[in-house]
Length: 121
Image 1 (cartoon, helix red, strand yellow):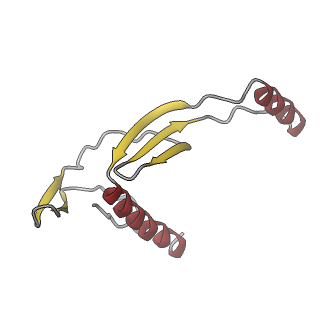
Image 2 (tube, helix red, strand yellow):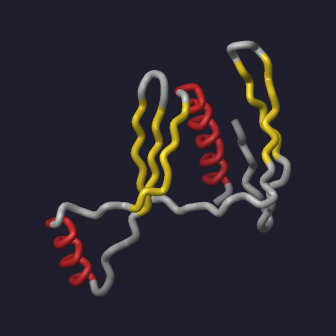
Image 3 (cartoon, rainbow, N blue to C red):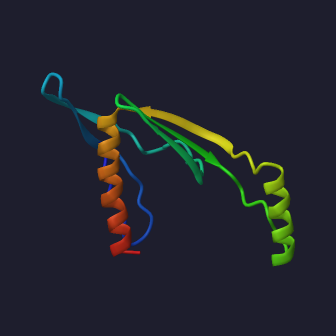
């Protein structure tokens, strides 16, 4: 699990972040050494599907660009056409499978990070 604090006062590069990885089956914690000096580029996503099963959670992320432009009337006409064609198909970004335990950790970390954003917009 990783919880990196939101930087204040400008951009911050992340380097050599270490997070604990507790292997509860055998009761030992092994550090995970993150090398974030040159991370891969982020991919935007604004659509998602979550499939939760008792043993795993599948997160699917996709991107759908805004498709309507022009005056409000033109946008309405374009939106009606898109709807009549059955909608839009977003571009697939990635699909991730995690355990239910990791999903709970992710939920906790996201909650803390979002609470911090609300306090320091």
